[in-house]
Amino acid sequence: MSKYEIMFIIKTTIEEKAVKETADGLKKILTSMGGKVIDFRELGQKELAYPIKKEISGFYYVLNCEAPAEAIAEFERKGRINENLLRHLIIKEGEE
Image (cartoon, rainbow, N blue to C red; front, side, top):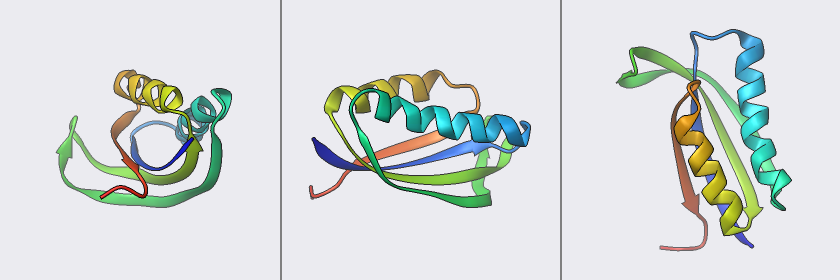
C-alpha cells in the first residue's frame, strides 16, 4: 500500500449535516477497501480563488492515508460523481 494525501472541497450551500456526511462518506470509501486513515483534518470554510459551479466558498478537508490503488481509483470515481464535492486532489507521497 502506498501513502496518499487527499485534499477536497465541499460546497457551503448545503446543510451542515450533509457536509459532515459527505466528508465521512469519502473517508469510508478508503477504509472499506482496505485503506487506513492516518490523519483527517477539517481546515474550515475558505473563499475560493475563483467561482466553481457558481460557488464562491467551500469547506476544505485534508486526508492522509495508506491505501491500495483500487481504493484510490474508487475514491476518484465517486469524487467525480458526488454533487456536493467541488474539487479533489490526490497526491501520492514519496514521489517527485
